[in-house]
Image: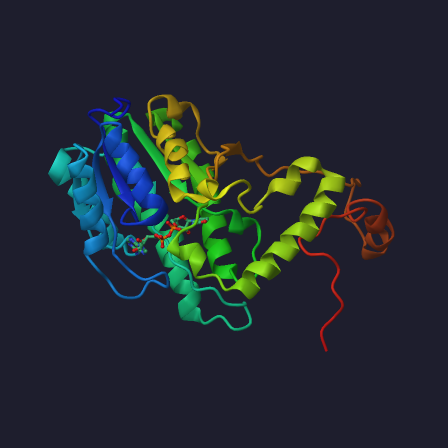
Length: 322
Ligand SMILES: NC(=O)c1ccc[n+]([C@@H]2O[C@H](COP(=O)([O-])OP(=O)(O)OC[C@H]3O[C@@H](n4cnc5c(N)ncnc54)[C@H](O)[C@@H]3O)[C@@H](O)[C@H]2O)c1
């Protein structure tokens, strides 16, 4: 058992299974007292069960660690604040929050219901705000905090996941802004792009997996010609079966919650598989300049030979459907 988190208190949302479970187990192994939060829902967010959170608490205790279970939802402001309150009531403080809880309601945008949109944004994006908002006043008082938001490479674009992508990339913008607001209080916040073979990835139908993989391969092939580093974005996990173990995410996410991890804030870190990766911030790659307002005639003329030249679109040109 390590000592990097001794005396620290951590909340891990969605810790009853999958990636969150591994994070909670390692937090406890490093000496943190852990609130294992999980609503125990199905992948689409329906149904509730107390057992996933309780089982992980049992595992942590059996391994000699300290943990309590919590089954409140991250999705609503009041219930999310009860998760942080559980940390305060049980262990007296809150030092780290990993927001891992997540659901899927995959659907093409032209079929997506308002409810499917709202449910996904509520758990991932509002969940991030709810958890951060409840924890941060306590972190400010103690001048210490570490926050990791589990985003997704799908935020870079993924067919059938407009709701999920919007929520996940929203979490990145949220982390970047909050990092600026909280740096003065020794609070670091980062977004991670995780990955691993869990029940969540098992729900993706083969046909969808194939479509996403074809689009990724085509975009990566063009990107490699343009800018070699872009080719790895959102790519499937490489290497043997063990590389797909969801527990591979835990050391990298837990590192961000240590004292040393405080040197990193407002970043996007890839934790999937065996590598640990740093994503570039978004920046201007090309620009055309004019002293004054552009006309459409001028843009018609210049675009194909300037910003539009050799453009890497997320999907290759596709013939229109009848
Ligand atoms: N598995 C991957 O390859 C992958 C890739 C990119 C991002 N992610 C993200 O990583 C996170 C974990 O994914 P996973 O694959 O372990 O999924 P999972 O389904 O195995 O675990 C998610 C957990 O979140 C819990 N949960 C859902 N809604 C909740 C709520 N409102 N309040 C509290 N708990 C709730 C569920 O009960 C479940 O135990 C998710 O945010 C997911 O979007 C996963």
